[in-house]
Image (cartoon, rainbow, N blue to C red):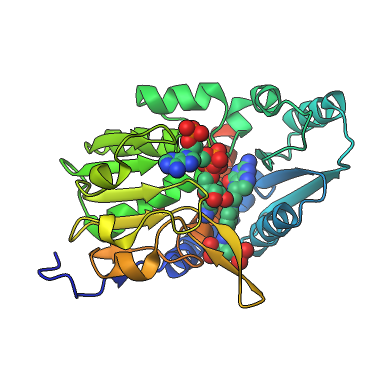
Length: 300
Ligand SMILES: NC(=O)C1=CN([C@@H]2O[C@H](COP(=O)(O)OP(=O)(O)OC[C@H]3O[C@@H](n4cnc5c(N)ncnc54)[C@H](OP(=O)(O)O)[C@@H]3O)[C@@H](O)[C@H]2O)C=CC1
Ligand SMILES: Nc1nc(=O)c2c([nH]1)NC[C@@H]1CN(c3ccc(C(=O)N[C@@H](CCC(=O)O)C(=O)O)cc3)C=[N+]21
């Protein structure tokens, strides 16, 4: 732990961690292909033309191919109807070559994302968003865990070892990040506080936490001087802000300020983001093995 306020935190290198995990996934994917007679397959569905979503979808497809998986990319127009989207999900559910289905969120206005998520075969729900998988997680049963929280947990375990008994705060309560993150930390025997837009005295609550996971989407809203000395900070937020005429990607945490108080902190970019893509590949590999009735390899 930092003894004084002027010790700079260790920067947690999510990109390097993800690269190492990717090497193991590629080996396991090749092994799966040799035994199953086909590569693990990931289908990514994008509706509309949101530029940020297009970038993420493309990088997911590129990574899948790089690791020896099959990538199926489906782009529907902004004007696609709920029925069209549901029909596509039904086709992917029935397609034996598809092990994982991810529908990029948010969907254009007018489309019901919960209905789409519920239509995905839970065994192919590599985003871990289906209520069945959320329920498995809450019940401590093996399912598919949402990629981003799963990646955050890997970084936390790597940085801290055992998390048992630590006070953790998760800021944000979405079904994609905040809620599953809190469940994972609880399963690690942390004492978990869930904060959101109605939380009172957020600085005070953050100031008592050994682990801070920020998943809000508000650029640098968590000030450095709120952080407890020696805390570990995981910054999920990604916001594009203009600075000096250029667009810059920033997190939810004031990185420079928090670095003076934390023992370890993830940067944005290069922290949680690359882990999210790699845990998606990991989930696809897990889904492929389970669907083929093969034991899931342990890559940790
Ligand atoms: N790096 C990565 O891999 C990923 C990054 N992200 C990023 O993480 C961020 C969060 O994503 P997501 O969970 O989908 O976002 P949502 O918009 O679904 O959820 C945001 C959450 O933040 C809470 N919140 C809003 N304002 C405040 C505030 N002032 N104080 C405390 N809590 C607040 C909201 O509370 P309430 O529920 O009360 O409205 C809500 O629970 C985004 O920047 C997103 O881009 C997301 C996924 C992956
Ligand atoms: N169904 C669904 N599942 C998701 O997992 C999902 C989603 N919808 N919608 C949007 C959010 C956002 N998200 C990111 C993934 C990777 C990076 C990432 O790799 N970021 C890089 C930087 C990339 C850049 O420069 O733009 C980094 O942080 O280093 C960021 C954000 C997944 N999401």
